[in-house]
Image 1: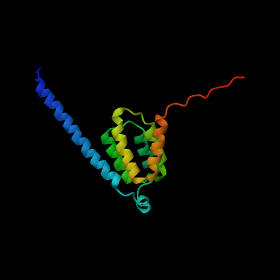
Image 2: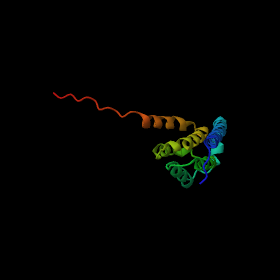
Image 3: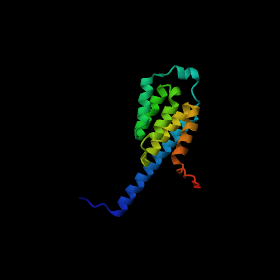
Image 4: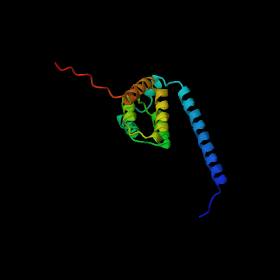
Length: 145
C-alpha cells in the first residue's frame, strides 16, 4: 500500500471540504429559487394528477428514510401531482419517517417544495415538529386525602 504524506492528505481533505461547501451553496440557491416561486393557482392545480394512487405513492415515499437524490425525485413527483387534499398525510408521513441526521437535508428539500405549493403545509409541519421535540409532559401532582 502507498503511504500518502500528511500534507497531501490534508490538502485532499481540504478540497473535499470545499467541494461539499460548493454543493451546499448550490443546493441553497436551488431551495431559495423554489421558495420564491409563486404558488400555483387552483386552475393549475386542477390540471394536475390528483389520483389516490399517485398521491399514496408519494406519501409512501415520504414515510421512508430517503437520500437527496430520492428527495429530488419526490419534488419532481410533487410538481406533477395535486397534493392539495393530501397535505396533512404528507406532513404526517414526513413526521413519522425514521429520522437520522443525514435525512435532515432531504426533508428540508421536500418541505420547501411542499411549502412553495401549499400554504397550509408549513403551519402543519411546524406544529408537528414542535410536538415531536416538546419535552414530555410531567404528570401532575396527585393529592391523596
